[in-house]
Length: 187
Image (cartoon, rainbow, N blue to C red; front, side, top):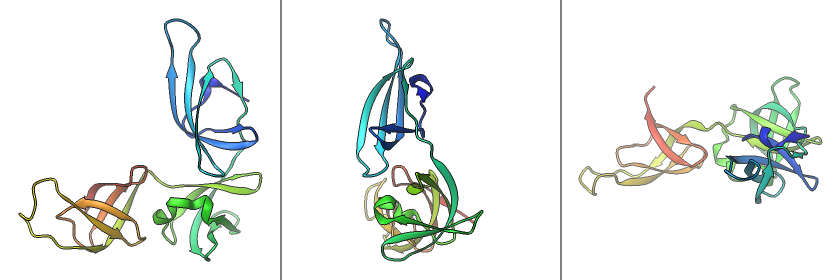
């Protein structure tokens, strides 16, 4: 059990026997009445989102979630296969669980895999990742007004809007939470 005031972003709570990941938490201390936390939670089974208000003194059930570091190996058509970096066992994560994160997975990279009751329920992706631009159309300077962008495709198939000066083969940093271009990476 966890107190409402101790809930933070990234906490996994149980709601009616289903694990929910807290994606946003707002602490509210009104002038009159008890303080409370307004939490936005993502269902780790079906991806639905739930907003709930919890008084800071109340307790809610938190889920015991194991975290394993897994190196992404390949997709077998139904599952994404990761290798546990400590035990070297394979962890099979279903396509439904990975969802939109599939375009952020690169073979050989390590990711944190959350496991609840011996079932993988989420793959944690870093907030910022560097990708190589695999496909990009060329634009000539002066074609458009300032601040114009174009779509590019990275080596994983991720489509990102970038400034016109980005060319094929260059590295870009992408914010994985917003799917937005951050900056060009020189290496």
